[in-house]
Length: 392
Image (spheres, rainbow, N blue to C red):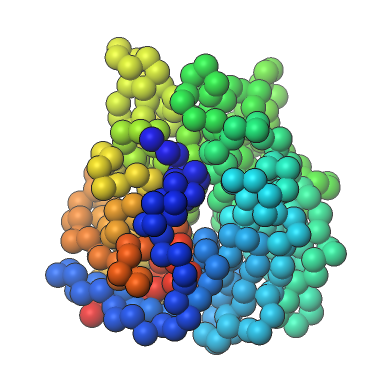
């Protein structure tokens, strides 16, 4: 069973991904019974993988193409030239790509931004760049690699999400590298950064400083960067911008997909169980696994039409007040977007699935979600289409 990143190639080979992204935005929105729709915003990207916006900037959003180009939409209009072009840094190997972008909380003053990409040697890189003074482009020569992680030649689980927390720290997720769990798994290895979420202070000494209050600082045999552990492939995760809760979409191995949740104030040192468990189910060993102290998913679902969870965001936008507090997520294979609200630690009010419009008669694939500066929510598709989640 293919894992998340090589599922992209696998599905494309089967013709499930639309091979040619359409150049218009004319597809009609979906019409689920819940009253939610996917309104077409833009299209024509070459494998779009992420959308974000600078903090507080309601005029700009950014869309990342997997191949390495980052595009600026200014007041909804895509600019003629890329905001930043990293195609020379990635493109080699089956797991190539620029994955995510995070703006420093003081971006408007210091123009600092950070990109997670896989380099031409198939290794993880997180690099800092500087935007130019007009904020409409960034200087590629300003690159400073702040984190590098060597990956094995057979690695397919890269994680790939970076984001700043309300504490001003940069959080970085790394997948487990290879498939299959123990004995190759590094998710439970205290000396490895793989299968973890890291917490870094990028305002200290170059390239980064380990925050003194990280959970494993000073513990013999532990990397101080580690914030959370026991993750397989946390491709997309997010902080709730209203209260700081953490939601993680962790891609499963071959049977289960999971969404994890930690309420704010989120503390470090939690173990999400991989490869001991896949979802809430024993994986290594397959029965009678020891689960004491592990964080159980708040929600799991089996494979079938599904294959790889795409974590999303809690809606905190301004346009649809009755959606406040609703968490939206997707799956690369399912053809729909789902949502729920939490009542304590239990998902409630699961809304009907929002069906994703076909592209040239073929199913589209949810690669990511994104928020603009106002908190409005977007779905990012492998076909190069971008949708906004709206009420009909």
